[in-house]
Amino acid sequence: MKGLFSIKMRASRAGTHVSGAERIVPAAEAAQTAARLVARALCHAKGTPDFINVKIEDPGDILNIPALPVETIVTRTAAEGRARAAELLAQAGIERIDEIMARFGETHGMRGAMLLDVDTLERLEPDRTRGVRATRMDDADSAAKGIAAKKNHYAEAIVLASKVQQAPGIVGEICISDDPDYVTGYVATRALGYRRITVIKDKGDPNGGRIFLYRGPREQVPETIRFLEQQSVLVTNVPSLETPHASANRFDTLTEELEDIAAAGLARNCRTLDSATGPTAVMDGREVVVLSSNDYLDLARDSRVTAAAAEAARTWGTGSGGARLTTGTQPPHIALERHLAAFLRTEAALAYATGYMANVGVLSALAGPGDVILSDALNHASIIDGCRLSGARAIVYRHGDLDDLDRHLAACRSYRRRIAVSDGVFSMDGDLLDLPRFLEICRRHNAFSMVDEAHALGVVGATGRGLAEHFDCPHPDITVGTLSKALGSEGGFVCGAQTLIDYLRNRSRPFIFSTAPGAPAVAAADAALSILEAERERVAQLRKNVEFFIAVLAEQGIAVQTQSAIIPIRVDDERRAVAAADELLRRGFLIPAIRYPTVARGAARLRVALMSAHTPETLRQAATTLDAVLRPS
Ligand code: WAQ
Ligand code: MG
Image (cartoon, rainbow, N blue to C red; front, side, top):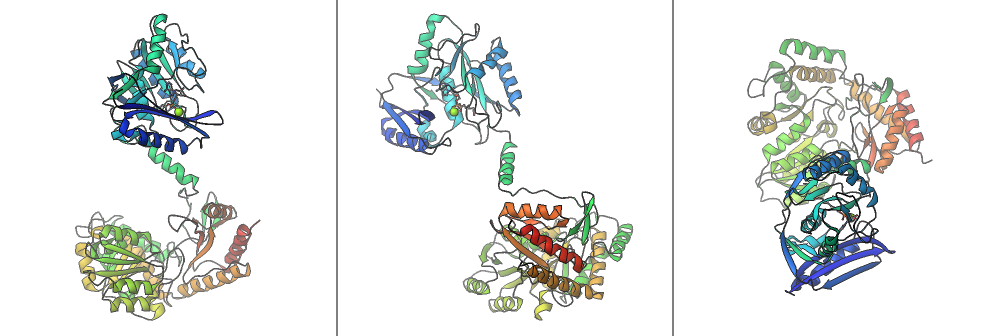
């Protein structure tokens, strides 16, 4: 006895084996190791045991042996894995391989291994139900590696396999786990070492086993078994796997995550609409009512807008071919920026390729370490990402709670720049920022005020000029907007003081390093803006539609609220929301389910967005259909 203990744990429930493990550790670590093994047994995936046996004993003579060298063979299917295993055995001079592999039909449910004569294919183990169990072995560095803490298939298998190949007469081993979730197995021989085969069985298959391959005289078999069962062995220099996921194909972690997403009812896919999207569109060969487009004023297919895009394509080309600061600026870009600034009555404007990039571009340029951004809890993802990218301190204040904003700003005097940022119309709830109050607080704390008016432009305010018009108050320091919603095109922009715009042109990386939006998109937005200015009845009609729809929903007993054209209908449960959206689509209404992570978990909703072009009949039908689909059956 050299101050070492052999510790064996086995756990069962109702007489059936649940888990087992063993260690050889210095006396000083025996108590802790035993406790860890018990803890591990108590939280085993197969269930809680009703019996745990821990045996702590003198290990007797200990043989130190080196670990087999390890190599990983990546396979994608069980069939491929077994074929590779067979090839390896052939390399090791073993014949009748197909017959040997077929013996795995007999190993299911065995606690130990089959001991098979490779030449005669006779089973040599005295107890064929149990098999031969290799025990009394450990990684010489197990304590240092913390192996006892949880089941580690590889760590245990490499120790076992290294010991087994030292047994007299053993010429190889094949192992397939009986863990339904563990598809990696191995083939081991002294010459080849330990060859891990990443996929050797199908996921979900509870059948596995071990076959120890023996070649030698019968008289030696008892000594082989004694060695496997009695000889204590410490395995030195066990190679560690490069990564925790080395057993898997590198795409497996992606597949697993996708499976988790799907299981939670959160899988996402793109639907194809086979027509221009207006108040109706063609999907899968039939017409559906679209109640979810942000083309609020139906300008994306307006002939004047599409003509402007076509004309710009002919004149300026479809792509700008360069960043704005190199060769990408053309007259349409300048014209649009002037037009936007004039529309919002600010000094200047700057176009971005998308609204997302405008938010990220402003925040990451304006704020950095030493600055602070105060952001509403329900701000759009692009604002959140802008906060992250900036490296500034980000403080999230409670949604719509401007007292909270005020308090936080009061505590942030020591920062170089303070930026308060909010959606103007909150994109998932349709509610409005109290802009006058927001501006007053920002002014008092000398903080930049920044508002994203993506869902406000063309919708909020008598002529669609957004929150400042609605509240009859000044604009924030920074207005972010989009060309992709009410303006029916694509792209984003920032409006504000000339100094701000000059600064962004020099500092905003999404602006500097993106190819300029193409002239067709830019000209389309410009033309749409002219229509918005000329036809203010579109904005009025949209507002009428919202009021009408809320009224007909109320007739159905569905109470909703909005201050914009976004109307959330709360369903809460993710799967129920998806089922409702599917059923609505079946009935010809396209209203998407909005789920985590776009909104909080358990706050799933159907999100209606109205257009000026929806007719009262359509809206009434939509309300009755929503009622039919959502009414608890
Ligand atoms: N001695 C002999 N046979 C055993 C022993 C043992 N100590 N323990 C298990 N077996 C037999 C038994 O029949 C099981 O059904 C079968 O082996 C599989 O056991 O590098 O987890 O514990 O990532 O499920 C391979 C690791 C993991 C591959 C194998 O085996 C890698 C595994 P399991
Ligand atoms: Mg197992």
